[in-house]
Image 1 (cartoon, rainbow, N blue to C red):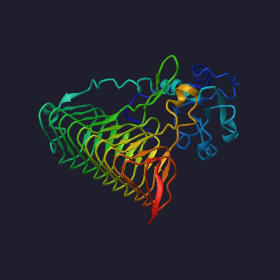
Image 2: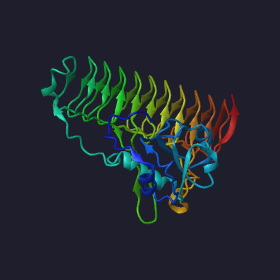
Image 3: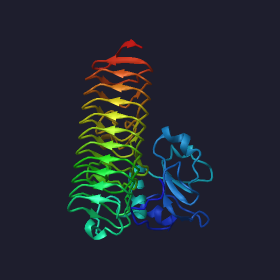
Image 4: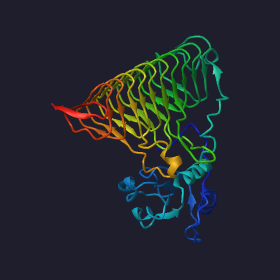
Length: 358
């Protein structure tokens, strides 16, 4: 994750304090009780950071990580560099939650922004920006010239809003970097915390979401849509992508350029959508093969990724289990896709079957 301007970061901490917080049995030598400055993903971690590894499918990243220490399991520790200190635990996700809360203790709460001021009192700062009535702006917000903010909208602290942006009424934006020429229609919620938690038999535990929402140039978000911020990484919507009304994009989703997503569709976490994809109305993506698998098994092994490759077309009311949809493939309306779909292939049905190749 890149540096986050939306949360006060605590630390650094001696590694032995983190070991105690995550209930790890490792006994550190004085040499290994180093100072840890941040909690980062495998690929973004620097030499003074801690990271985590909870699945073998990330071994390509874990073998190259620069992190000083990594929360993992006994079986997965072999996929880490020799120099990386392995903190072996039984429940990686629970330990990750405890460690990330040390550095970002308020990231799972979404406290109201107490710095908000009425836009009319800030006209000197935003002389080239227009607004409706009852607009509230947080501290250190940047708004580009020729942008318009509709009535009863809220732009929270440290949000970056580009030039020539059009923000509708009753919109809330937090934890976001928004490029030029972006249109966000009425009622949208951008940058809210995602639906990330650890389910257990006794209590559901919230995981901190310290990522952001990145909306690239020319993006349009339809009315009453919700874009969740990322957990450790960012939620990204690429240039010139259009979302229809009432679309929900979950945390950590990556969407490419020139994508169309029609109304009432849900793009869940662990989904990546490449450029030039078309998604019809009411499309559902699923990341858990046997829900609620974590609550039943204590493992995320059934949580899998979905990749929708460039130029694919997903028909209305289709349901995608964790699969790969090939380039320029077509998924018939109402299909339930349970297996990978090759490039340039048409599938349909429940379960979806190949009916033609282009």
